[in-house]
Amino acid sequence: MSAENSVADIKTESHPEYSGGQLQDTYIDGYEPNSLTAPHSSLQRTSTWVAMGMIMAGIATCGILIYGIGTGLWGNGTSPDLSKNLTIIGAILTVVFFVGGAGLLHYGRRYYRQYRAETGRKN
Image 1 (cartoon, helix red, strand yellow):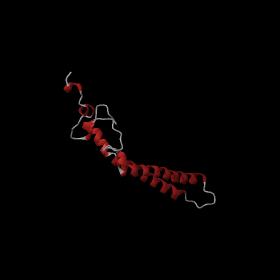
Image 2 (cartoon, helix red, strand yellow):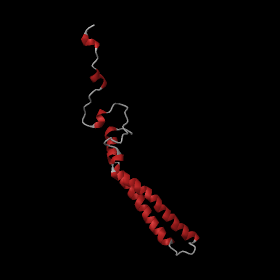
Image 3 (cartoon, helix red, strand yellow):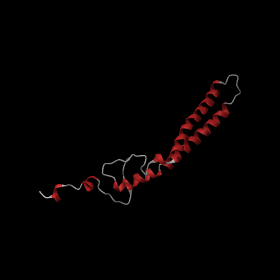
């Protein structure tokens, strides 16, 4: 038994070097990247987080809209009649927050859509 053939080259067998133009070219087949540190991750974008905040705030504006409609239908007791104003303000704010949040979310995920188009991956 010769000394050359008895020892494996552990470095090249366990840590192969990959080279490629883009990061996804170095992924092993079947690997689905879902890391926060991936360059295409939407979780690194400020616009994604602001968009989700706007959508959550849109839920509160729906409450204003519902309250305005409710006081218009069943009365407001002894308080002044603000049902028309609350309904208009609630409707405008609801549309602004939901549409603005959806648009900003679409903008924040642009690199992920680009990654999917380039690689054909679903994740």
